[in-house]
Length: 305
Image (cartoon, rainbow, N blue to C red; front, side, top):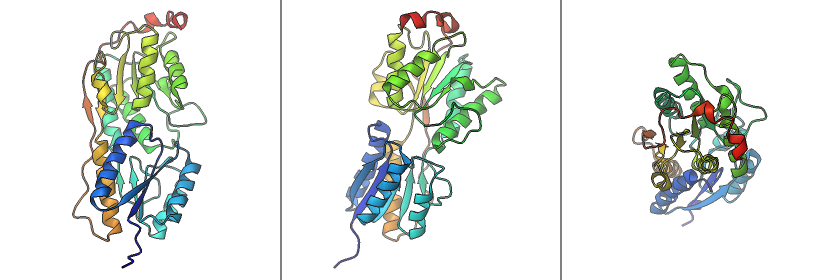
């Protein structure tokens, strides 16, 4: 009997090379397989235009529903159209303005506040944050960002500084970290000058690898010269010397929750209760210490590079 279903789920993410999305995809595919669904994945390189095309292609293929990690949390008209069409839609990892659908994401504001507090209590005041989110201008407080996740993280950082009665080092917020070379350049800049960063927060695992590489190339040590903290707890973060302090996110569980909700919608079942609580955890290891030589290294770094 033809039920009109394709038993296929479409998934759209920004960067499948990022292990964060790879782990979420594992949760999605494991859940889909158990319920008899196949998964079609499209990667957008965090480009909204590519995401619009991806959604159109998947709808043309008559997928039963969509899971999307929005490239933009602001420009969301294509997602609103999917919602209005009645096609089941679930958002992953990020919220989207004006799109009232089930969204599975971690509360980034709270964990960012907690992790920044941890650095401040260790004595840090010059705390840098590095992200790939794209902007047309250098960061200024209050500017609209495409990513709800990054906006929430920056809000958490600001709140921690405000509560401590300290000036927020907005000059150390670095966005547009698009590739390894740009991340290395950003890191070099952060560690140079009279007001060098004494701690760096990397917003994902790919950024973290390049930041650590730049620190090592400079002949600096973690945490002796600069403290380091990153989002996501991957196996390699426990194998470095020292092991890295991380913000662990339940990414696999987030993928399971998103797929389960979408399949429930496709099959016309009501939610049995509230969705799972997706909370991040700060795991303290060995990469955060008291501020190191800080400004003393400022005049040395350019010569080393």
